[in-house]
Length: 288
Ligand SMILES: Nc1nc2c(ncn2[C@@H]2O[C@H](COP(=O)(O)OP(=O)(O)O)[C@@H](O)[C@H]2O)c(=O)[nH]1
Ligand SMILES: [Mg+2]
Image (tube, rainbow, N blue to C red; front, side):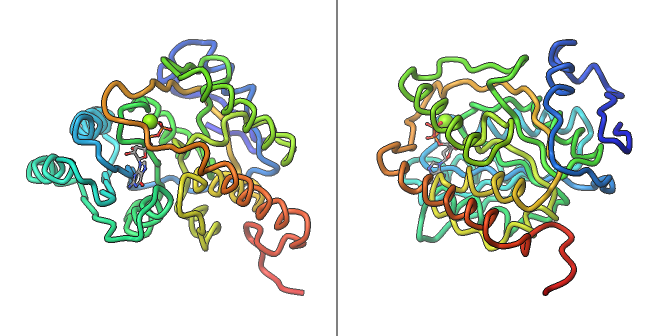
């Protein structure tokens, strides 16, 4: 439950792994304003997938089970981006017995960002969680996200690097680059969020609509969404999450190809922040 001053009072403490996690949430409440938003009816989970035959079934089944158990009305949208392995077959088998599963094919052009946008465009939910296909994100964190959205936040941003969060088997070099990139983003935008680059986040539909047009074709969508949401004045909270490296299949993130694209989207949104005089902010109702 949230008080009008934005303090978080956790009605369901059992959702958090322990008392430290709860305090970590309290410590990371941010956002430059907080208007209480109405409760939500349906959750959409968008999962981009490319050549994930070894893990897509487990990812979807575990998620479905967790959401059923918690009685969260949901749909799961998997966007298959021209996979050349058995991903499409695995999804077809799942779809036959899971009415909540929507399988979309991205006919091209391809790319992580394009697949995420295609999933978001097709969603029927009042809010969306973007989740990976390789079992790296914890389904229980999706439930935590949903709880916080229902308490009134516009966005919930998981962080693996605050008290209560953790990473398992993160490749060392990638971890170093990740921490440097996130430090750079933090300094550039002057906020406390320290895991901006991770895609696994939750947004109300109103935030997604307020961040359009979405322009990132590749992994830079992972920066575009949270940076726009924060810059445009949506409320957000950061909570500890767990991430584990994939145990099967191959990583598709090509750091060399992504560096300049990440920089591009950062500078694009920084320019909006510095020069647009708030034209794109939430609840902007007049033009001058
Ligand atoms: N639809 C789609 N999904 C992608 C693409 N590239 C990566 N993914 C998915 O994005 C998620 C994260 O990719 P992954 O390879 O695990 O990146 P890493 O964890 O950073 O190494 C996985 O679910 C992938 O299947 C793509 O081009 N299209
Ligand atoms: Mg991964």
